[in-house]
Length: 267
Image 1 (spheres, rainbow, N blue to C red):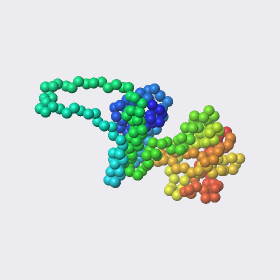
Image 2 (cartoon, rainbow, N blue to C red; image 1 turned 180 degrees about the vertical axis):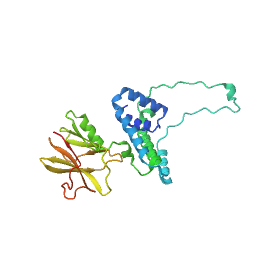
Image 3 (cartoon, rainbow, N blue to C red; image 1 turned 135 degrees about the vertical axis):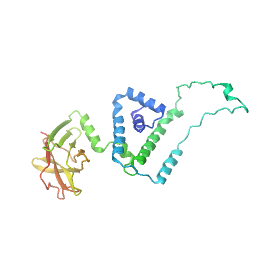
């Protein structure tokens, strides 16, 4: 089993939707490849986040019909043939039928060898079904099981050999941590406890380089004040990463309109 196949199974496991055989394959693959556990966490976190954040609604009947129509188009394996019973045969008197063990050996190109492609469709259908149950239209399947770009960037930085970070804590308890890596050319700000803003305001990121602020994008924390935001542009050694409060959409003239509410020194 390759890593992509395992990621598909991790989705089904998070949804409690694997067959007994697939669950066994999933557990065996995880035991043999513990470094794949990031797929397990990503799938579980996504399902938990959606179930906690989205109010259930009734999906349109047409969506359910469309989903099951697509599933019905999948190729079906023929059921094993069963000999017809002789007329008047007494099944109780005949006793239990003998059980014949099946061989695990599967020739190349057989139904089991082809099943991984069907399993990917199963993961898609199961994910779509979860979206229908948890809140139709709230997210796409890709959003549900693909990490946000900022999280991917943070993971790349943390894996880099030259990864660095610096933090600052404000008097109100807000914690902001800057992560960066010269080799990846990326930088990310992670916040915890940022105060909520009015709907016509946003937080804007800045590189402050030689006393000159350079706009680096906007971000909106979640209800708990948490955010993971990628800074636009390349960070230079010694830059200060600052955050200001600006009109929705960001500063209209490309310069800060307020004093920074936080600043993280990187040197």
